[in-house]
Length: 133
Image 1 (tube, helix red, strand yellow):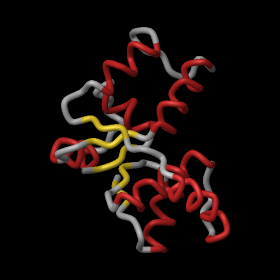
Image 2: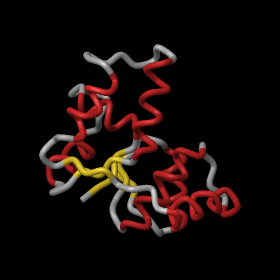
Image 3: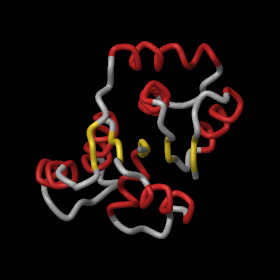
């Protein structure tokens, strides 16, 4: 099981070369692919700003994506939300969405696949999360 960062979701679905070989292998090996509702919210914002184009309506795309055989929605729990709010005080440098993804992966005890160097550096320093790229 593994949690995907928002950009990883988009690159994985588009079979984009920007997805690293290691990230692709981890996704292929994972029994379940966890997706945070926070990432879905971020995708909507990216589509609305014109930074991402989907091949169908956002609601249809979301339903189709979540219906994928190995895809599972990872609930943002109150505990993860509070933990995400505390991360900046521990030196986390990133936006609130990144903090919520980090806290969700940590709470679930699963790796987070992300290209974001800030997330990976923080995880390496804290040693409380396996961040993969």
